[in-house]
Image (tube, rainbow, N blue to C red; front, side):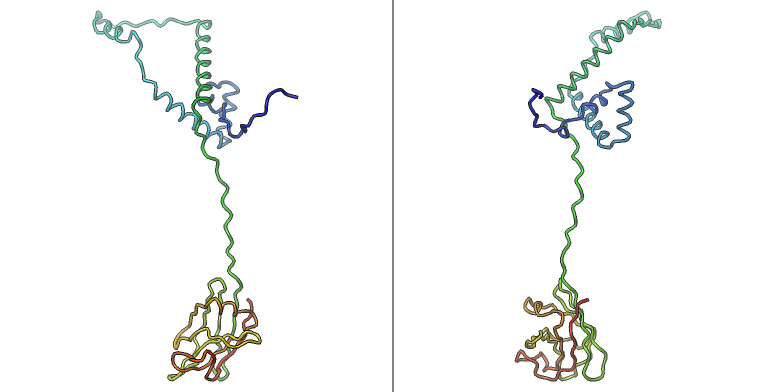
Length: 250
């Protein structure tokens, strides 16, 4: 068994060290090529590299740029010199002196990376959220009826939208100048209940009360009676029934 205590930190919550090293330019050879392939193939890794680059840019921006100690002395010498252009010969560094400097610089950058990791948390881009499952709204059954006139005339089509609690009827030429057409629902074995008055011209749309919505069921009968202008005053049909039809489920 391992003596290392379990950690409460999940791997998914840790910043990607490889992305940070790649952002600093510390990876070369096979490691650099592998990181480049990951940038091209893994969007999450590419976002992590960009986050590291932004983080380091903000961090380095806080350090003021300092000129070299002998910069002004060299400028002054060039201004007060003999006027003849002098080509400076750069000393050639041997590999034994050059590579230790590069190695030291890489070590310094790696150390800076570790300091940033543990002292300034990296703002990792948020993980994409799965799209929410659309909520299905139960609209209830749709019922229809064809109300057939007892005399001559075209049937009246009725459509009930249970979700909206509304009835829509096609044009019904059932009334006359002295009377109005009133629509009733008659539950099985029950008494008639008024649903409203039909328009004298054109179709009719009725929004039902909660009580009448409960009465609109498959098998219930719809009927139209002729009533005085303004509708029945008794709560029951008082005039002749001129059309009937039964509701059925679509």
